[in-house]
Structure formats: C-alpha cells, structure tokens
Image (cartoon, rainbow, N blue to C red; front, side, top):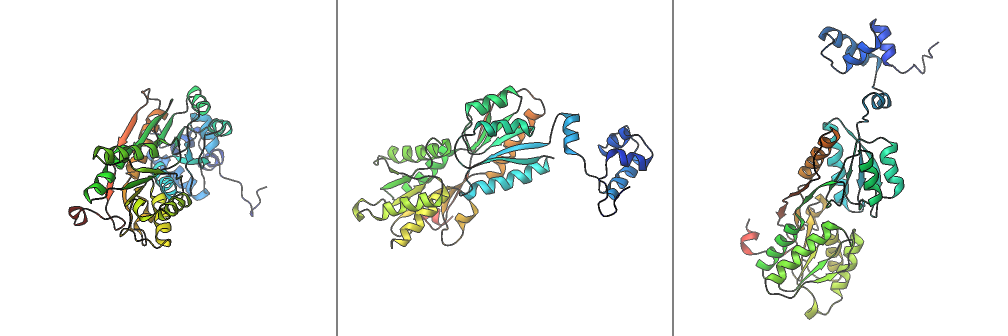
Length: 344
C-alpha cells in the first residue's frame, strides 16, 4: 500500500495504467512521436504534469545510448575567467538540451581517474577549458568514441579546439602601448606550457621588437592574483631608471594583481606605469581597476565549441578543427593611451 507521506515516484508504467494505454504509447507520447495522436499526447502530458513525472535519465541512456551529459574540465577557479566560461557553458548547453558534469577543476594534466570518469558517467562528449589533455585521456576518449573539444586551448591530438586569436591579442596591446609612446615594456607570464599565455606573450614581444625596441623583460607569473601581485612587487622594487613604463599581464587577473602591488608601493597607474591585460573578465572593468584589456569573445567561443562537439556527438565523421576567433580591445583608464584611442 502506498504511503501518503512518501508517494511512489511516477513512472511510465504507472502513467500507462492511469491512461489505459500501453507503456510504449506513453513513452512515444512524451517524446512527441507523431505516430501518437495530438489528443492522446496532450492527455498523457497532462497526466505526467499532474503526477510530477520526470524522465529517468539512466533508462534513457540505456535505450538511446546517450546520457545527455557533457563532461566539463575547468581551469583554476582562482581566475574568474573560468567561472564566467562555466556559466556560459551551462546556459548554452541547457539551451541545446544537455547538462554539464564537472569532471575536473584546476591546473595540471587530466589524470587516469578523470579519463575513466568520462566513461563511467557515460558522457556524450567533453569540453576541456584549461588542463592539458594527456595522451592517456585522449586515447581513452578516442578509443571509446567520446568526442572532445577544447575551449581556450590549442588542440593536441584527438580533439578540436576553439580559442581567441591570442597572437592578435598580444600584438594589439603592444601596438596600443607603442602608439602612446611607451618604450620600456615588460610581460608578466602565465603558467608555463599553456598555449594561451605563450601565444599572447609571443605576439606582444614580436610587435615590440619589430618596432626596433629591446625585447620586453618577461617576469615570472602564474594563473592567479597572487602571482600578478608578486610580479608587481618586483617591478616596484626596481630603480626608477630600470623600471618599465608599461606592463602586460597575459591574463586580466595577473594585471589586476600587479596593479594592486604597484599602488601599494606608492606608484601611480597609469601615471608611473601603464598596465594592460587580456581576457575581458567583468571584474577588470570595475573600480579601482578599469583595466585596458583584450576581451575574449567568450559567448561565441562556447557556442562554436558546443556546435563542434554536438556535431560529433550526432555521429558526423569530420576531421578535427581549430577555430580562431577575434577578440575586442577595450580601452580603459589603466594605461596611457594615444590621443585618438583615448577619444574613442
């Protein structure tokens, strides 16, 4: 006998009994199968809503072979860029009828346990936003038909990738500072071995040296505010004659950390040192930062990444792709700008 305090969960079978039809008819009606008349579909939908019926995801997986889950490997959340990326991915995946399963957070390689979880939870595909795709994880995904798309990273093997044009980001910021008359520049590096950071720094350095200036000094950095703060302290401790007149943090969070350290040391930003960054995170636009930044087209990157992934989940056989999207220069108050730029 059913306990009124803990009623049994509605199932396809119980709905079928109430509707006086076969269970297969209920299943088809709830999928809007045109073989079931509109009147019957409407009656079963009303019964399902009244009973609080929700589909059994495990049963759906067993029947269809798909879970409706996309695995997400996320970068270190000390950098707000990754939380913003996760929010975009959640919203956009849901709009396409999928849910995200968070598999990994932080820097470092995807370990074997994470690779195994891709299969254990029967994810239909995987988005990787930061961690290096280990050869072990790549081979497991490839061998088991789990498509992988990387966002904000360059693909290695067995994966497509969508990223901002990071070389262009570095070049654009260098051009802006050069046009404003800066001549002694430095770069705060990101985590070593990370394609995004390497390309941004390379683009910046190449543009500066192409202008006939000495190569910018490269300061050790990392992936969080503390690393940028340490770099800013190191710059502030230099004699004035050796101090750069502009700093490029390869991520906004590094640039923001450097700004805090410089100001704490009594230096003016941008009066004494201009500071620029890249990513375009929301916090960078707020006081007291108002950071000049090269913003990644995050919404478009996630959308294109999901398009690539869902095409492959749908069974399309296509070669891996690398998609580069242009970002946008956002001029703010953290850097001395050329007159024409300051007026735009």
